Amino acid sequence: MVDCRGREAIPITEWQADHEDPTILAPKVAHNENLERECGVKAPNPSGQAKAKAAVKKRGERG
Image 1 (spheres, rainbow, N blue to C red):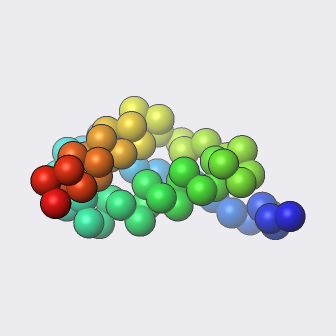
Image 2: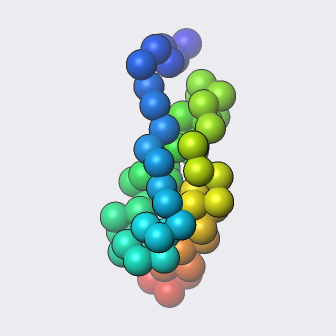
């Protein structure tokens, strides 16, 4: 069982999703997705998280 005490999601703003490099966003997105799956903790800014996830996915497709 995963210990969820003290674990927090990383806030990602829409500005960050639009301007940060996807290689910087990817670990933040992965952390938040793992935390949600393992502990039920959602990212504090769902729209920023969604934009960042899309940017990371788009970067992966270009490759």
